[in-house]
Image 1 (tube, rainbow, N blue to C red):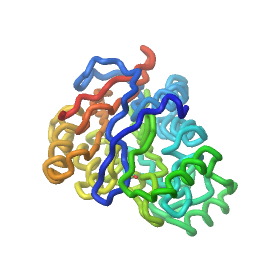
Image 2 (tube, rainbow, N blue to C red; image 1 turned 135 degrees about the vertical axis):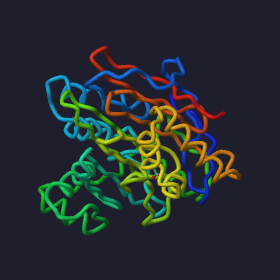
Image 3 (tube, protein in one colour; image 1 turned 90 degrees about the vertical axis):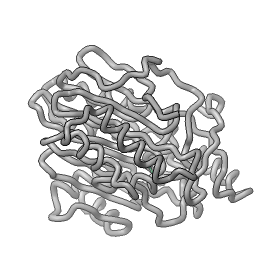
Image 4 (cartoon, helix red, strand yellow; image 1 turned 90 degrees about the horizontal axis):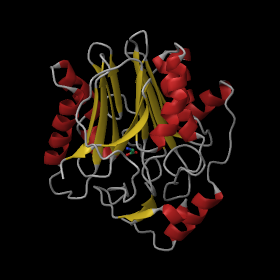
Length: 325
Ligand code: GLY
């Protein structure tokens, strides 16, 4: 993978690295706006979303539920040790710990989340257990791990040889605003609408590379990294978590759809707002995907380079999102 990586200039509020744009893309260049709906449908962020969608759509095609499709879909990416931004193999924090964040949500408001989870490679499945087996929504750190072990999850070392090597290289400079080398990167967020009209979403990440120990981004936060409401639709974010949290990003996209905007226009409205609020951060990258209850979908980002995958009965396609710049 390394020889195919592009070096990406990054910048952020805290000097932590989030990718600005990928120089490599296999995406369809049709920079589309919201598309006419079909059902069932699955939509995921980034090129790795194609792998998630293939597994998720098999579930949907066979009459399975949206919640199963999004969980089992993103697990594929969590399990990929070559993916350095999700699950096993994710970049560690600046102390060398891989810490994972994830959340899952259904259209009826059911949701679960884990943050700062260590040594458990499938945080999304732990988040689902939080939703289904506890009276709570969010468990963090050692509490989340204790719960995961009680639920039968196993501990394992999440720092791969490659990621350890990259971490040791980073330690040579300890540069907090480094150029980082990732190909198709960041959080995986997946939204699905099943044949019965049920909608769900999942979001999972290892967060910002070289982050402060204990830092949690938008991805496990209901309303920030992900929001789902069967009265309006679903939305999920990718990019610099601090900017998404500050603006309650995904909840705002869903609210915009509730107020009548198309998924594309809703993503654009919130991206515009985020950009305006962070006008001095020229390299800030944030993107959203959104899906309404009819199966219409859209995406939008601040900078070019954000792509997203769509899976329907017509096949699997990767699209470049339209962007502000
Ligand atoms: N969007 C992922 C993060 O900021 O952690």
